[in-house]
Length: 134
Image (cartoon, rainbow, N blue to C red):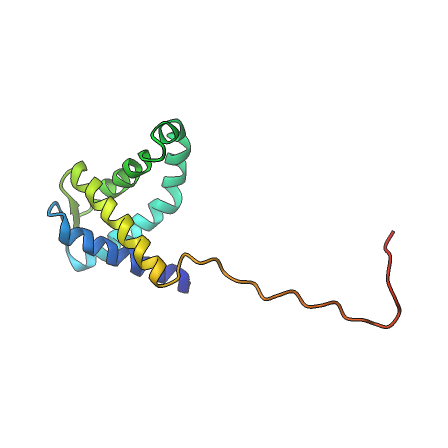
């Protein structure tokens, strides 16, 4: 739950920065919170399906088509009542900014680091010698 809230806060900050830089993205405070929640859900559920369906385009464009997928998702979220994205172009530039800001914030907060497992415990010696299972 803590990881989810951290990613949600990072996404909210990134969308806020994008809205400040791209004039076609407008919101109310409640709309921003709800829009980032919906964007996170779409990124978790719809984005993998879109990537699978558009895999040939992604491969032919050397991955650049992923920016179009991100823009489509932001544009879809931009049709909410209190969060609006004026055009696909605004969604494209906004998604680039969101990706960049999220990358920086995830790096600074170590959100992108894999979780570390504790080292394995050494086997205990029971004094009976080696055990061979057959």
